[in-house]
Length: 291
Image 1 (cartoon, rainbow, N blue to C red):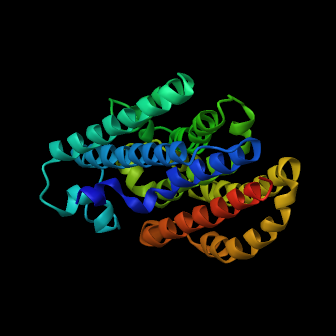
Image 2: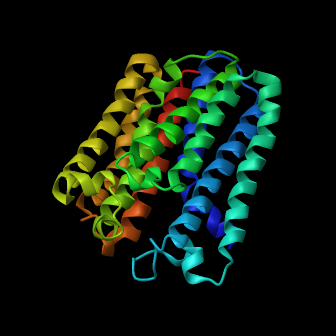
């Protein structure tokens, strides 16, 4: 159940931004494999902490129930007799473990990754905790996308190369979109439930019709951003983008046709996770082609 609280199916949101940063760092220098593994472990621990915090606060606020088309492995506290305080302790422990590993990164790369990590940790806590958490506002998609998809590559690139560059944040635009869409998938499917819970998520504010149109536009922007960034900075990898489109198109088409309602939530979450894996892996491969 600890593993279910950590929700490994969401780990691509942490692994792929780290992989893209490693690929970009490989173009500039020869990054340390040990440092890359430590950074990957930190990213997974922080993602797991987010998941455990979210499960805990959704449970104590009674935002989740067995009637919400939630996968039993994705709502441990709803379907199992687990002390919620133990889930909270797990979340805190995961965050502490991430910062303990971060000591090595700080020792090697300096204080910049610490500063970025502290910003990320603040968002981790504010996302679910507090009187008005970020997950209850129309900022959840942006916050998760920027923190997981943007700050992770920015910090990892600096730690791996020893050089801070805002270009790393620009190169991370596809992972920002991809991670943000994971959150938007969940929130669009949960519009009716969130209205009842008085959660003002972005899809709730937009309404279902506009939320779905925005969602589709972001899928197109996701593909376009990968091709554009590869063409501008990693042109040797453009051939990889051809295979990316061929591999990603069937999943994107299925997701496009998904009504994004509560009944199709489990399928939609699987589709967006798969699309993140495919596009993130091919984007990283396109960048590595220039190494």
